[in-house]
Image (tube, rainbow over all chains, first blue to last red; front, top):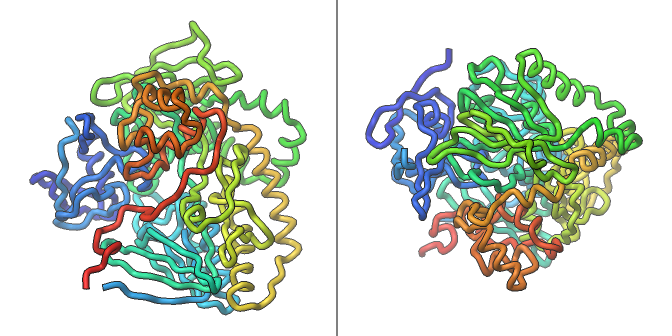
Length: 85
Length: 460
């Protein structure tokens, strides 16, 4: 079994598989969307390889981080702007 | 703040082509630096996770070997590092402006190999911006690299070998693949091009096995696979709840009366790959439009030289051809870069050239069989968003075209289509299909990737 780390998403603890991306951890926690567009529409992962910038969130105070190409780390703080879900 | 470094040969992109270019250049005695945006070298095909939830696939084992060979040859790797600007100097040397996280640096090299690969082509259809719609590559990456299945009932719809392989990969994860729809009628396309099919598949046993093996596993799982079918729209308000699919005619237009609704919670879509030429365009390399190779590709000379002295290119960024071709092109480009940087003549090798011809036949077959058809550009309705970043609708793009915009660049200027953080990588290939002529390639401008302000304008 691979080990688990705990990250914080919008103030709540979320378990994540060590080595997984933040996007994978968010999906595994049951979310499909975590960003809201200028027009108010929800977005989550789309391309999965860092090209489309749909899945961004604030990670450890850095805004607009692509969660699909960012690996989870113990204690990492992820702040989303909702994603309408 | 900024650190400068120099080397004989710099390689950008650590996939099949870049790894081989770096290995060959380093082994020939050139000081070689491999720059890659991801944390681990390997690229999309070899997908090298440090930790994986699954036993490594044969492809990943092969990738690990290539990475180890490149390191053993003496290459240095700068991972997690993106190129955001580049310039070819008058003396033939090339300067790259890099960012590692928020740390800027520069790298000056005697010769550059661009091996930036490709990304997936997606076609806007109604509902494609709903959460739960993914590229087939994203589904594969999330599953293979991160151990997450994107949904419980996943519909695959598009064209090309990747959706089939990605769908088969989901079997046994608890996710159900509800259907796999391939727009091209493969048997018919193969029969129409018997010579290309026969010569293209010559000695491509591994590839056939991968494709047929995937199809077989899906069939055993009871998954319906249909060719000549495609997605028409995704259903749902705030996330995917289903899809409307239809039989397609030879131009990929939905056949009236064949539409039906499929219940699913995730959709994987994919219409081939688009060469990632941003860095090459930024450097001013000559580019031509070749739909059979995936779109805009650089004009190539001997040893994979581009039109810019000292700049070489290899792999999918020079035209979609897959890993086998990328490996060979990477080796040639590595030799070319060494010859240029160290002024030391290199030989391409007869066996390598023979293998290259074989892989190019496969490339031609792939381009012929999976050619895009016109109907794909007609899926979007007036209110469908075509530029995901700037949320520009099909109607706005249509208005710009009606007002005289003829190229992707002019549509971009009028509508903001392609001005968002993805820099048009997702929407411009689709936009160029809407215009009558391909026009010149869209201009590439620095920064190629979003960079912290301090990197662009250092203080002090």
